[in-house]
Amino acid sequence: MSALDIQQLRDTTPGCQSGIVHFNHAGASLPSQATLDAIIEQLRHEARDGPMEAGERGAVLVDKARRAAGQLLNTPASSIAFTSSGSTAWNMAFQALGPWQPGDRILVGRHEWGGNLASMALAVQAGAQVEVIPCDAAGAVCPVALEAMLDAHVKLIDLTWLPANSGLVNPAQAIGAVARRHAIPYFIDAGQAVGQVPVDVQALQCDVLKSAGRKHLRGPRGTALLYIRPDFLQHLNPVQRDVFSAPWTAEGFDLRNDARRFETSEVSFALLAGLGNALQEINRWGIERVWERVSQTSTRIREALRQLPQITLHDLGTTHSGLIAFNLAGWDSFELKRRLGLKRINIGANGIAYTPLDMQARGLASIARISVSPLNTDDDIEQLMTALGELSD
Image (cartoon, rainbow, N blue to C red):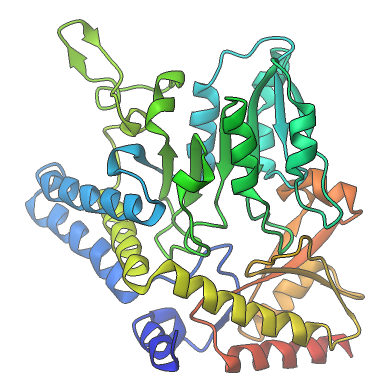
């Protein structure tokens, strides 16, 4: 992306005009003015014409959003559902995979998102076992080790692709090849991947993939997308149903034959209008260009952090994402986040609950996190490094 491209992005993003340096895109990124306009315009129609009456217009916008999501993930629009959060999406798909039986095995990476592990509680109560796939020498999930673990009792392989507490990019495609070879369901938590790295669900060979709208997609909070492989749909029996997800037929209520069996009749058309605009924007820019820019910016930040002797980086793997986990000696991560905030610099901070298996394995109580976007500039980096240098003295 050229300097002119970056300036155009920033000029059309209100948050970039506020004087705040935003390095918390993995928590929630900054929406464009056009995304805000799309939300507000739908709300105006609802206020003027009546909320239900404006639903027809809203449904058209949701269809556009669904097609844009399909384009981004290389899949038909019919395999995309929209939900209120990434955790909701993952939990609904996981619960629909049941019922769970004693002896069932669920294989996860050491870096699994804490919310996904929490959702597995009912399966564990039913007798299922959650087991951790060993890591390779660089700290990534090991496909060879995974294959050695497989037997007839493995009911699910689940991978958090880009973990919240490190710069790791797990080998999602290689894991998918193992899962498909053994015909085992494969779920991907792509909450930090979609909108940051190219995501091709055909190449990944996953059965389910989810991501939040508020992160690298730059969509509004309260939105998320859920991909279901069409041939896998028959294996998912959602617990939550209504007249939209299971419409009335001559034989009674029956589940939809597409991913919308995970949606409900009550949705925020305004928020999905905003998500649709955000999806269309990233498709116009091109995800490959976005990923190239993120890689360049995060590399510069990592190099600068290594020049500060009080900084410890917590990167894993050989390929690194735009999430940079670190600690500053003498500082609690959450207090560091607060103090930088007083300097009008936003970063993130994560505790053990976010990635409990990996945090405990590495003896980490908390981490501070910088996460980048094409919106970030060299001036942003300079301000961040100046502030960290002052705090490390």
